[in-house]
Length: 426
Image 1 (cartoon, rainbow, N blue to C red):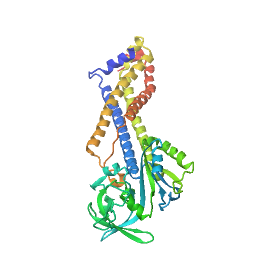
Image 2: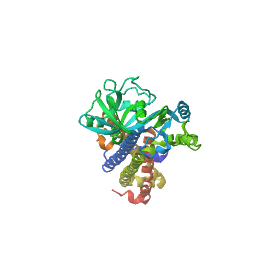
Image 3: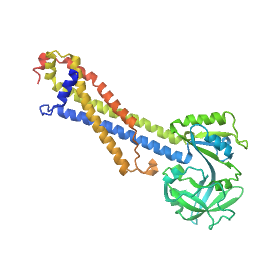
Image 4: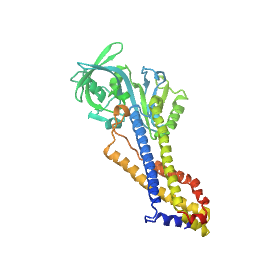
């Protein structure tokens, strides 16, 4: 054990009250480091939780990648593509693709005796991954979606309705509940009417989805669009790793688009990632990173400032000890290292309590949801928290390293202290 570390441990472990000035300074410095680290941990947890929660909501409705007719991108016209078994199997074999599911979009109007509402019908096939929808159901249940006519020759009527899932927003506007019947009107070459049974109500708190999308069988949407055979609006792909979404999309482009790949009916295909489909949402989420860096900078500055103040007070109070050490032959470097070790002990204690406070707040929020939010503004009803162990470790290391480095300059104050004068210092 080095001499500087030995002396630092001895003076740090003193429990007497003779140092009436340095003890409060040590407590303040420890509190500054603890508060700064706790705020940083909570901030990172909230931002990560918020970004991933919103991302999962968008992916739940839009998947990771969509394959569409190139002529329908950027328009309201849903031109079909042919998704046969061969194309589905080819997409499934692309490295990184986890699941392939068809969908079709159709515009219509939901009408009750007292009100009406324009909506977008999203038709889902039996292979559709409904785990996200299941998590966001607030009333009723999801039906078994199908791409075949569920009526089996029966005429659609109130006695034989199609299944429909609507959002809580739609249910509130039209005063509907699970189990109710409602008519939908579709306008094309002629006006057609279908009867639906509201099997369930979902709520994602994402206004752009809850205001617009209701869910029905793929067969119903295809029929309204006059699609035939294997035609549908597009196919959605779920990937194995979101962090490698761009790589998976590049493989799809290389395999299907760069080679001028057409479907079996001659339609040119194009891919659209979730970032391209909803750029405003992800640009907004990226802006949160700026706020995080600002908060991290302020908290590190707080910890550094309190540590500098505390170290200066401790050096001034230990002037006589410094003079004695110099008189005994200790070099300035040894004494400087002593106080840097002493400061490291203070920072370590602050990091410990900062982790306890920060992680305690996170676990309390995850367990109780004590901090609630307005879902119409923040898209979530309570502050989401996500623990990322590598980031927390990085925050601890960065706080320790930066706090020690900023103390190197103030530690040179010991070189200005002369043994003869310091022994008379009070």
